[in-house]
Length: 485
Length: 142
Image 1 (cartoon, rainbow over the protein chains, first blue to last red):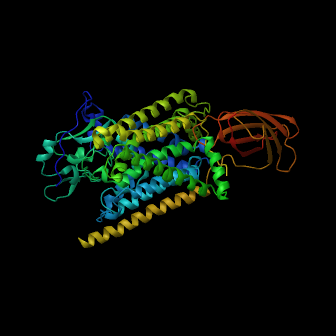
Image 2 (cartoon, each protein chain N blue to C red):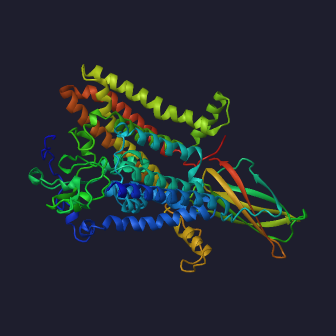
Image 3 (cartoon, one colour):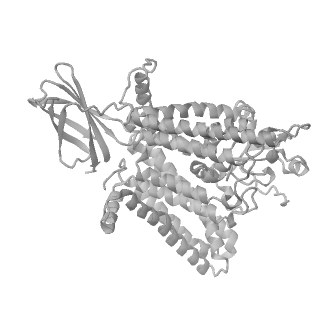
């Protein structure tokens, strides 16, 4: 058994510290069926989206599926992650079919040990980004619905085959995004008092609560293998609150905390280990940041010119091929060069004999706040400029199904003007760079002692360069995509 | 115990097969029974833009419309709706005016750079509806 983590973090945030103790909200979250309730609401909406995507208009701006998925869902997702936590995983309806399937049978096999890293998640995350660009998912209601069905089918197939929640932990691309982004969330599921955990003999938070006589599980423990006394931060936590319901000592809190704080700590984390030894997670963190840039880059005019130039150089008019080259450049070569040089220079400037591999892995986490800032700025553009567009589209749906309840579509409803959204975008980018520099500073202070300033310099150059690129991107007139090849 | 497991395993396969079949059926059904609200092309439409490579701002549209027999469509009510191919933008609308038999003109404002498409709907004097979808790719900033 690993040694129990000590309460090391100081509380800088005033009362109330535990959301579960807040009236109404806390009572709802502590209700055993709160997650199922959220999932059923989300599941009903998902069903509407699938049907509308498959059978509704083939015009993206008039189809509720493309609108809600690519404009409102993504905007609300990042806002919820920053304002609350991983609530979208909490209410994820993709798990409903598997919940039904598991009432019929219980898988007995464990997910293969060799796959218990984030490499599948890395692949699915890149696949989603690539498919989005290559096959214009944002403009295709049918394939947007198809993507939902693929995710539903994959969740069902994986979790019906293996114990626990391997789909959420290792496969789901949205889950991987949410895990990384929720490191910037202001809340965390954690033990209230570790002394109580020390005396706990049943470990219900991970094993589940069982009937005494039959040993049958009556309340699921953490399916993502996060043992609460050793849980640190939000990585791999779906906010399912199973541990809250399972703990017989009522010793679990949804605690307020400083966002990003967990990125500078490197204890042995339950279900994860030490971050400094997780290459796969570090790669995911790098993709999170550079993927944000690449995704935003796809929105501005210079990308079309670059695509045309690449197509000319390659002598092809295949857009997926050109995009593949762009992805290799943006997600592999560019990060390898930038982070590679920064790491080597940091060790050289600080006259350090630290291992370069460990240093890279550690510093990769400093990219998360900036990555989150870029994703949020980008998604806020779509969300805020198209804030009320769901009203006429929903009215249009009502009209099509013969329901007069919503009235005739008022197509003039839009959102905020671009000029008002731009300062908000800059605000998120600003918070991102401040967070990244703060975390990079803390990391080099821990690793290089008095020579931290020398080690920080090349990394600060990397962060400021990425921030400058993001600001430049947001300053470009945001085009709504292009199919120029 | 073993019997239960085997029974559950068989049942699980049935559940999986049912779910996969449902998904595939839904996709197939969706692909062949979509609401193609803008793709009815009974007559013909020739659309030209001025400027030819449109930029953000007003654009002059000239529409030459023929009925299903190939004759110029006269005295029709022609409405145009401009949309971007990304959801979340407010559409723009214009009414076209007939300048000579079968020839209509309108002005439409492209409010953002990127990919647009125009939905053109014509209602002839005898009440026949015709509609077309025309892509306008690559509207550029000035």
